[in-house]
Length: 490
Image (cartoon, rainbow, N blue to C red; front, side):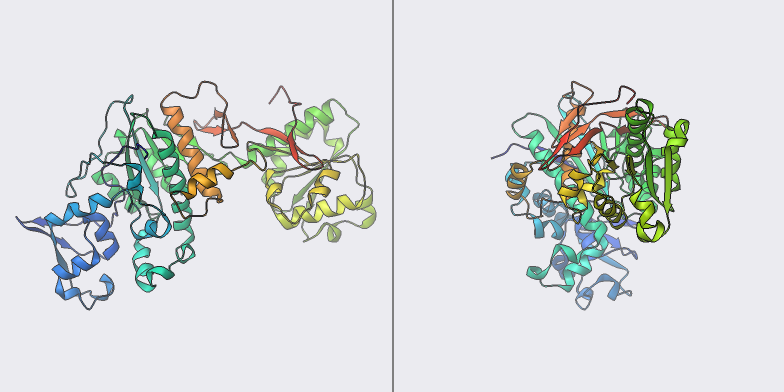
């Protein structure tokens, strides 16, 4: 039996249009808005669709609320508001979670000391040495789940029935929940968890902030989309809050005012810069006779600029091939391809483009070649490991290739039926563990290894923290190993 104490103010709150609410001694009157569904009302008031219809017989003919535009208001009994509380943890995502959870999360011995007033919701906070206050803001798009769940028999609903954005959010959320369970197990620490559906909507976020003060939080995960994340970051005035963008891997140029803005995914462009810098220091500066060939897709102008910034001093040694054809054979003659030698860099994450070049280089049978790629090469299953070994392929990555996740998968399956071999589940798990350890002061050194990934967050010029714990990896005959030769400038 696990001891996981969870404080929930409203774990999953659906915000639609601002609604006027009248109260009486026995019930409240809810005025229907265009965004309302049976599902959203269940999450807001803790009352099931069946009970809503029972209290409002005029809805009997309405499979969906939108089927009855003539119904403008419905009754909600106040005594029903707290019936949902007993199942809040196991029903955080309502019917969706029940499809994927093998066990109710109440088996974690969750006895929520709940503070709930559905008419005047507030976030709670306590001393940092006893509790951490966390909000999760993700686009679950739960307004669409009501129709999905109503359209299929319960035993026929599959995860793929739901929108891709919903699935990504659910997977990431599941990883977070599992990390919370693991971290708080056998401790006296407490977690106050607040989960919101952002819908990828600024209006939803505005409504959420109308009723809730996120400045009382310690850690905020999300929102997922950059526009929404920027909106929330502009509203946070408490500089002690850690605000985490969980899945954004693109370069960020915006300047932020907050002190603790973390982008959990590493910047792909930064790894290209690291690779170009390494090539310059290791192969050009020290061995100036080396020639370097850079293969780029025609539209990869940004990548070329980054690489040329590092290699411009030795431009006579560097040749750029900006390929505008589907294959290298259509861009270069066989004679030109056969004359290639030396050092190669293929920064693209296009599997077809990279696979074609690797195949042609391998056909040259030149064992002296050294080829640098992005770490996306790990996902290109069509390229044989033997070819990558023959070409001395190397790449920078913060993650250990082929890290053994078997223990995690076994433990995860005890609570969830979501497939744990999913990058968003992994990211949620690592994200939760890292920032909980960081919050409670458990990260002694600047670099930390969690679940096969190294973390060392560096403060960038635009006032964000980004992970740059990149290691250099090399293909060996039957494995991929870390190369210990490092560049001091990095």
